[in-house]
Amino acid sequence: MRRIHKILLFVLLTAMASYGQSLGDVARQTRQKERAKGAAKKKVITNEDLPESPYLTPGQQETVGKLKPAASPASPSSGQSAEQWKSQILAQKNNIATLKAQMDKLNDSVRFVEANAYYNGVQYNQHQVKKQQQVEQMRTQLAEQQKQLEAMQEAAKKAGMGSAVYDP
Image (cartoon, rainbow, N blue to C red; front, side):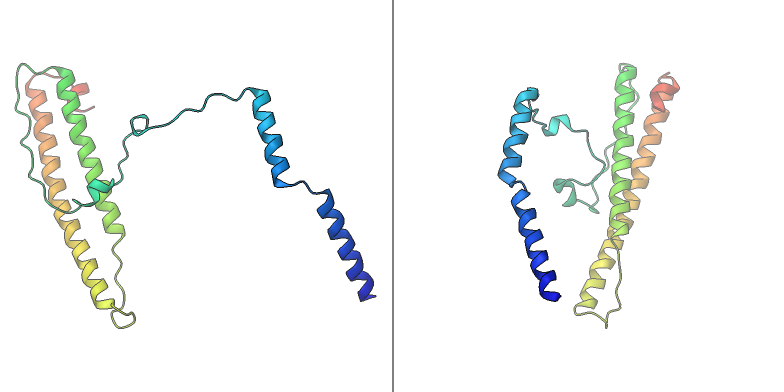
């Protein structure tokens, strides 16, 4: 009985293999279908086509947590147009959002381990402490950036700009 089952299984498997389609045949058929449809031209997407991401880029990763000198807030000038004010304020808001995202990402990566339970546990925890210190530095920098944004918004108000300019 077992021998019959084995023979039957072997026959079924070989029959299925003979009816199966090879990968090469499938690829040829797919290419022919694309040609028949007149496949649209392929578009190459470059970095210019992609929107800016709030996440870290390789260049930003090197400066995460390092204090940058704060740029002085834009001084109220009567020659500045509403679009200039708006673009400066939006750029500052984007800087703040990027810094918050970096800070959140770094803060989420802090994980302490039980020092005795892991090989190099002490060194790992020291690295986590450094990450926490970087987060604190970034908090300080974030507070400075927010003060700078408020100063820019106040200057735009004093220059007579509407709320659509100073609070876009």
